[in-house]
Amino acid sequence: MYDKIAVIGYGNVGNALVDSLLQNGITVDQILTTKKQEIKVVDALPSIQFITDYSDLKADLCLVCVSDDAVNSVINRIPPEIPVAHTSGSIQLESLDRKKNVGVFYPLQTISKERKVNFKEIPLLVEASDENLKQKLIVLAKSISEEVHEVSSEKRKEIHLAAVFINNFVNHQIFLAEQLAERFQFDKLLLKPLLLETVYKAIDEGAYNAQTGPGRRGDVNVIATHEAMLPNDLRLIYHTLTESIIKTYHG
Amino acid sequence: MYDKIAVIGYGNVGNALVDSLLQNGITVDQILTTKKQEIKVVDALPSIQFITDYSDLKADLCLVCVSDDAVNSVINRIPPEIPVAHTSGSIQLESLDRKKNVGVFYPLQTISKERKVNFKEIPLLVEASDENLKQKLIVLAKSISEEVHEVSSEKRKEIHLAAVFINNFVNHQIFLAEQLAERFQFDKLLLKPLLLETVYKAIDEGAYNAQTGPGRRGDVNVIATHEAMLPNDLRLIYHTLTESIIKTYHG
Image 1 (spheres, rainbow over the protein chains, first blue to last red):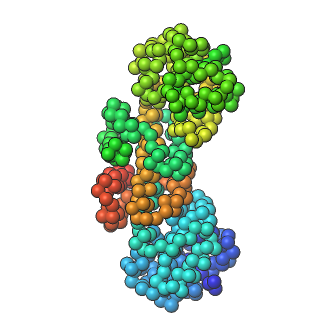
Image 2: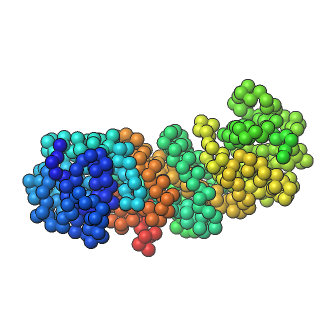
Image 3: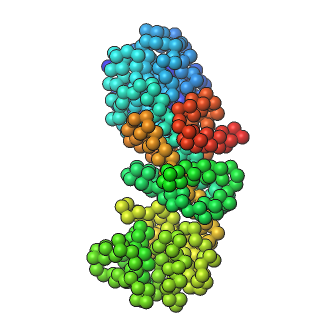
């Protein structure tokens, strides 16, 4: 489908994407990065040319895997005749300077170098300025994922916002519970079976049906006891979320 | 260890506990319940005597599996010579009228009839007014779980509070994301791989290290854009949690 693919940026997403492409028999010809810590790993992939200069790019598609605030300027440095797709959840296509031959190839997942993720199950949200590029991106996406969706910039932005609740805020609740474990001096691993069952139950039954606890029951005595046990910052969060749960179930 | 075990209350916890005891070769002699919907299932367990009258109790141990607000009054109806343990996370031993022969046998898990849980991995938090009863409860607990912990009422209350963050609040974040999926008209299943990876990553790396997103980066532009997209009630939650994340990482 593409003779030559170049990946720009070799951080968390770049790493995972290159791995996944290679594992699925797709050749990656070039990786461009100007970051020293990313260049260091060059030896691990002898079949791929590492470059640091945009004028050395020779590709039919550039996949841009850089941080959100660098996406537009990086795309501006890529020769306009080379099609480009960025991998960011929140950057609208219309916000970019480039208007043609530009698309999106967004994996809806939290990706870090330390953890292998299975791209087959990761939703890939695809969009492009041109029908031709869009079809090519869809074919490429389907070669690594079974969950390929054509999604507009507007919808992708909305999905990304929901993902903040699912990833950032769920993680922060876990962090706050870990803080309480430290404060109250018990092993946080005690909470692990509960956390896993909470998530699988919410997935199976839907979170509305799965809700339990003092907010769900409207148990003002337990709520008052809990709030009295918490330091100010956690009390505010307890209060805000419990009010929201009470409103959900008791109007 | 016990000749005769009676379980009082046959709701979610009673069901799961009876199942688990039977599966591990522990005989349950009696189940006492006065709730019609719980009596209905009597036929499923022919080897166990279902009773509705406290005067019919013949047991060396009563496991009380009723709702928090019924625990004290149920224990008061059990003949004082029969040792008793309740299964509630938040009820202090000292808050009960009974002062002797009374203990706690608390499974730290969210339990519902629809979902089988593996008691082997569920932490069982045990406490008792008397050393003799405590030792017996520990032996019983170890027969069904590999995670048996002797825990004071005070500590159990603290663990229970952390469990509210892990269960109630994580579930509520998932609910809010499901609401957004409905509002923005996309399939909530798109978020499932992200949710699972979020949780496993937090467990493996610790939630502090696993945090990402606009609050972690202190990205005020993305935060403002997100808040503008949300209805009032969700905006308040977004704001409160994001402020907490910013404070965690940027002081």
